[in-house]
Length: 281
Image (cartoon, rainbow, N blue to C red):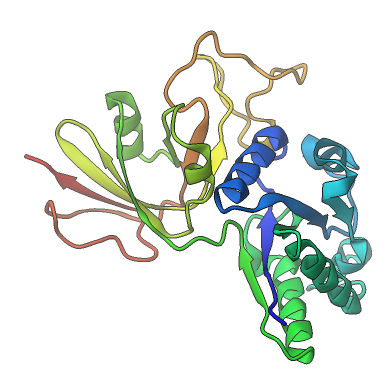
């Protein structure tokens, strides 16, 4: 019996934009010929600052028919304060695998999630190992990958001058035009290379799947201490843009590690290198 691909996911950065998150993930799965995904919350506790994932907020958004809270696979250290990762009930990985198999028969992928940005330091990485071990115990291979699970690819974008200047001076995101296909943006694999072009130069950046960016009126600065509150006024109401503009819908996030220069058509960016700039003159 074959095992479906299970996706792990961290909602970091999406706390106030869950509707767009679900829209993007649904678009990706629809493009793959599948039903919208089934979500399993593996947090031990659901009382968090991120409004879209506080309590049962996300469950209410997607509906009970597409959601399950499974605290048995939560990190017990969150409650005890102990160091390291201690899964509350490791045997519950068998229940999660059973659910994934059930959903797979209906052409519906399963996404299990928690809050952390990086799976390497998150308890969902331990859960992934438990799932693989359980699949092996049953005599089959398990496949658990970080969402969206797509292979890296190359993408070319022509940026407006203002966006290109910001990227050259250290911007941590690359804006996408509002008409960029949602399924394509949401399925962009980690480690993909984006070639950003303007009239006189080009930049290469290593990126991951797109995130939604709330437009920010001029004169306001985002709250760097609380990323999930960006795009909100002091009273908590979302800020509105007077008109659509470039980058209103999605942004591509990458980690800036170093910058350098390379001749046009020269060496490709390598893992750990965020931006390579070359002149088109």
